Each structure stands twice: as structure tokens, then as C-alpha cells.
Image (tube, rainbow over all chains, first blue to last red; front, side, top):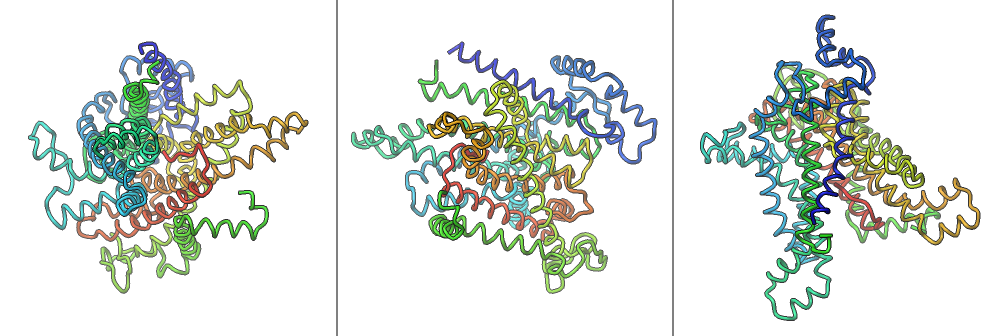
Length: 313
Length: 287
């Protein structure tokens, strides 16, 4: 088991290395002088020169990469060209809303998708199955922001139950925190739920055809026990895999959702950085999310052993 | 698949599958209508999409303005109709670019052992970077333009195509008919043309529809957050971004292009799902 974990851990090193190289070299691969592009149209010669030094564009590529990488490994993601503050500090300030939104969306997605996916598979071909699967296709065809605006229109503008936008930190009380989080998490969670529900159904259909399901039914187990203990448990590997892969969807969704609902999270930080042409911030956030994505998929990989003892080698 | 050399048989195959997989028929129909509307946009749109009419600003949908007017009185219907062109253009261009580059990398990876490990590590790394952020970073550096949007989205899609083609090549290489062809002295280009490429066709077609859908969505998201198509061009994401601030009292500016966007992605997804079920290619995955 330990050697399995170690092997998987080592396998992430080349991936993370490529991520680092790509994220870093983007600045150099793009045509033209990045300092001129980043400085914007109204920039003076001085601004451009200052930016060139701030980004160390006057240094040779490898020197610069070495400096940058050793900084990153020590937790230094560079300095924002706009606010002159460390990127890690800016990220730390914006972490709470993003973590809250992501976890809430994940919880909503799993809570909706697993039961619906299992039921759809159990009643394959029936009304429930067709309804759930149609909603699922609709769910990931509708962009998060369109869904978000429809939800705002219904729950905030028409019914007035929930705030239109904004964020309340959890320190200001659980109720206001949840009220502000509800709609963004629902908008983001629904698309993710659609993806998970489809895979759950497919995986369950495969499992339900197995002999041991027939045996479980024959020995008189209740339908719930058959579906959950014998069915879902054996369908866990593909389901967990899509939860991990779908995390990428969640990340891009975060950027959009935070913009729609005006949440001061990492997505908002990224969008503000685009408008201010603050490349170090974009670079830092991209690196952080990519590393997170790799780690989450590593965790998914390792979790297979929990569901399927055959994988624990 | 075998029947496709004869055009009438291909049509019959399509018609038969459209009946068994209604998604193909519905998706194709909706998409065809949208393509026609986009092509005929200058004739369908009652006004110039960038014509400003300050007196009509924020007007609700009605007789003069079917989808209402935006903040500076431009006709949302005309802008939405023209926006379809951008979405279709981006979808097609990204699908063509990422399919052809991915095909090349996948073939190279599948046939040339020593570059395989290297190429696949690079692809793994690219896949780990969330596509929106990769595109945002590229756009921040190159500036907003339609071409850059297409390139940025394509870069994010290439790894998936390359992996797909590589797995097809690896499984095909082991097939008896390929071994027989090699033994019979078939030259590599002919082997590629006759045995390998035809087998990549079905999975690439299905993957292509999913790429189209995801490119249309990504372009809209990028334009919405200000890192996509320049604001001077009416694209669905741009129209929605402009309507964002007045959403509470003029929701039509956001809703109409939003629904058009959802409808297009839905149609393409239905088509893709239908094609996948009909052609049953292994290896294709959406996410």
C-alpha cells in the first residue's frame, strides 16, 4: 500500500513540472514584447521599462525560470504589478469565499447526483430515468452564468428569499453566510451534478448486470441494500474518477460564479487581474489551481484502494 | 460504418440511426436552423447590431425590439443573431485546429516510441491546467482578439484529442489485420491511410462535437469575464457581460443571448451523445 502511494506521488512530479514550465513560459512564448502588451495602450516608456524589470524580462530565460521556480518552491509566487503586494498574500485574502463556494457546490452536486443516478439506473428506460437524464444533458449544456441569472431572477428578484449577490464571511454568523452562499453554490453545483449523475447511472447499469447483484436479490436483500451496498459501492471507482476530473469544471465555474454573484474570491481576483493586466497574479492563480487539480486527482487515484481491494497492490 | 462508401447507403444509415437515436435528428435540426440564421444574419437582423439609439435604451422586448434594447439602445435581437456567427466560427475553428494538431501528436505518439513518453507527459501537464485559466493567461499576454481566443481554447483541447488518437493507434497496431498488412509489405503511408485513419474517424467525429460544444461555452465564458472576443464584436458572452450590471431591471439583455447559447450547446451535445451511441467508439470521454 505504501509503495503504491509513493509511486502515485512520484508520478505527479513530472506533471507538476510540465505545469510549472508551461505556466512560466507562456510569458515568453507569446509573440511581441510581453512588457508592452501587459503595460497596456496608455503606458509610457517608463512604465514599460519598470514592468520589464519587475518581471525580470531583461534576464535570460533559464536564469529567470530558476529564480522563479525556487521562489515558487519556497511559497513565493511573485509580486502583483498592480498593487505591488505579494501574490500569495492576495491569494490568502481571497481564499475563504472560494473554498466555501467549492465545497458547498461539491456537497450539493454529490447529494443530488448520487441518489438520482442510482435511481435512474434502477429504473432504466422508465419515466424517472428519462427525466433525470434529460435534465442532466440540459444541466451541462446550460452555462453556469445563464443558470445563475435564472436562479437570481426566481429566488432573489421574484420571491425575494435570497440576496442577489455579495458575500458574508462565516465569522459574521452562519445564517447570513449560508444565505449568501446558497444561490452561487446551487448554480455551480447543478452543472457538476449533471456530470456526476450521468456517470453514476452508466456505472450502476454495468454493475447491476453482474451475477452478484442477482445473488443479492435472490437471498432476499432489500432493494436499497442491493442498490447501495452491492451496487453503488462497486460503481464507486468511475464515479469518484469523474468527481476528480470534473473538478476542472468546478474551477472554471468558480471564476464565472464569483463574477455573477460578486464574491470576493480567487475567481474575482483572476478577473480583476485580467482587467488590470496583472500577469503575476494570473500566473499564481493558474499555478495554484493546476497543482490543486493534480493533487485532487492523486487523492482520487489513491481512494480507489478504499473501494476496490484489488487495486491495493 | 461499412456502408458509407455508397452515398445512398450512408443516407439510409443516417436516417435509420436518427430514428433510433432521436438526439441526432433533434440536434442536427436545431443546429441547422442556427447555422442558417447565422449565415443570413445581415438579412434577418432588423437593425445594424452596433447601431446606437439612446432614446430606446433598456427598452423591454416588444414590437420594435423583439429581444429589447441594451444600455445604449442597440437591438438585442440583431446582436444575438450576429452573435451566433461568432459562436459557430469559434466552435468550428477550435474543433478543426485541435482535431488536426491532436491527430498529428496522437499519431506521432502512437507510432514513435521514443517521443511517446515525452509528448504524453507534456499533454498530462497541459491537461492539468484548467482550460479557462490557460486561455485567460494566453489572452492576457496576447491581447483580446478572435484569433487569440481560438488559439487559446484549442491549446486546451489538443491533449484530449492526442490521447484519444494515441489509444486508437495503440489498439489498432495489435489487430491481426494490421499485422497481416505489415507482413504483406504494406508501406507505412498506405497503412496509415487505409487502416489507421479510418478507425480514428468515428471517435474523432464524436470528440469533435464535444469540442465544438465546449469551445462555444468557453468563448462565452471568456467574453463574459472580459478575456475573450473584443467588446466591439457582438458575441453572446459580450452581450451578457454588458447586460450584467442592469440585470435586475432589464433581464432581457442577459436572458436572450443566454438562452441562444444554451440551446446551441444543448443541440450539439444531443448530436454528440446520439453519434456516440450510434457509432459506439470507445475511448471518447466528455470531461
